[in-house]
Image (cartoon, rainbow, N blue to C red):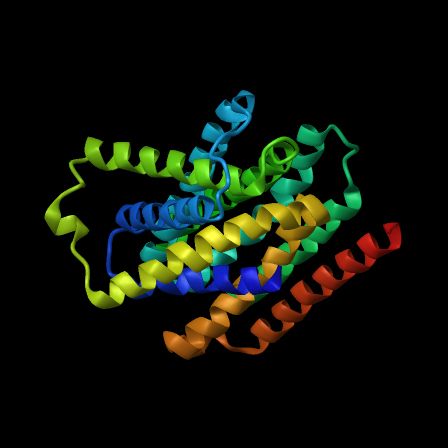
Amino acid sequence: MHLIIFAWGFTGILGKLIHLDALIIVWYRLIIAFLALGFFLFFSKKTFQIDWNQGWKIVVVGIIVTAHWLTFYYAIQLSTASLGVLCLSTTTLHVAWIEPLVKKRPFSWTEFLLSAVAILGIFLIAGDFNPQETKAMYFGLLSALCAAMFPVFNAEISKTVSSTHITFYELIVGFLFVTVLLLSQNGLTVEALQMTWSDFSWLLFLGIVCTSFAFLMTIEIVKRLGAFSVSLSINLEPVYTIILAILILNEHELLNFKFYIGAAVIVSVVLANAYKKGLKT
């Protein structure tokens, strides 16, 4: 799970390393991801058939996932890689109330309090927001809401549809959704789609490793650990991203005393949740 979170932490860096518009980045990401997964299904001789009674749910979640990526990259391009992932700290707070509604289980105040403490850790890392980053923060917070919704809904769909098929068809839905957006804005032009070899290499890494593989494995992990535990652990993504931003993007000013305190708070919350889950097994 943490290898996947580390890969996701790198996606924030890619938002800066790939010199394309956010909508184009997501469009290419979806193409590469669903083609890679389609080849996997074909060469492993697996059927493409699914329980079409779940089809409308897959369409809805596919759009939600795409909205999460779009708002995430807009937030990064408007500000920094660090702020984009810091806003995802609110994901667990949303999961704490969405999961009980979907699964019809009692609301857990323990999970809510753990989420609140994790958010405190994120804001310690973030420090004071610049007023110019307000718009980026709004996009980031909207991205967090979408990020909270799709693992909860996917956990329900995965009861009757395999993780591979869920991922494959949600990626196709996302690709069609972004294509319609681009066509409506006359965004599918030769100029908009042009890229460097560096952009192409990073897009392959983003589409195959950070999307197809990570997305597929996350659904399996959610089935075993639950959406809340996975979302809570994803709070480590900002820590990974900031470390990478320091090493790759030279954001040295973020590495201060507050960073260490915030990181310690987040790690403590993740370990506390793991301990709590372990007591139930």
